Length: 330
Ligand code: CO
Ligand code: ZN
Image (tube, rainbow, N blue to C red):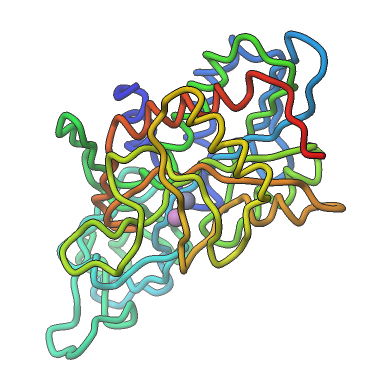
């Protein structure tokens, strides 16, 4: 799975511009699913029909988009001012590199006299242009962090593990799914980082009976970190709560039972910030019982996010186990 993860994280796809990631995923799964379609916003919706009766329509969601920046102004010397696409922390930017859609690379730096906590307004991108006329970047052009994937053995480091690692897990689930009573609808969503927008429209269209999001969550296992239960290497995190949702208790319990039955390590997630596609799926139409399986991730929304590879493979096992039998929410 590491090759697949590398391909996905090194692909270019800020919110609203997910087409390259979508094409990569479509090519991976087209032969193993019964049907696929792309909706009006760009969500990729892939369906596997049930093998036996007695199930429901289960939507699994992982988002294709990554955070990034967008050019807002080019000055007469060719320096680019920019705004954020999603949750970009100024502290993570200085000295970093970004890449525009055409492959052009720029470096980010900060006004020399600026003091205090860095703000985006003090920062600029330098693409090596000599003047405004010479600058190939136009207002409105998006860019993403440029950073290679690194395999540290048990741990992986890359940009956009949020949420391409979730996409890789969903691809594996769609490939490995064998004996299931459920119609499994894998949705690779757009625009999660700017407000769960792709999940909102795709859930309305798919009309699932039950849903799970697959996304990353923060950890509390680094120096002086905020006290949090989640850590790398202790298994997939079964969400109980984040700022946007309370997981459906029966869906959460069913995930816990599955992990215990199959001997898969797991941890419980209570996150004081953030949310996932699960929040908007849960409140779509008349409501959908929804849970979320999270991959604990260090340094979220930085150009070097870190996950534990066994957590990733165990998440695939957990979701496959979850889908094997009929689900009774009564
Ligand atoms: Co994110
Ligand atoms: Zn995410």
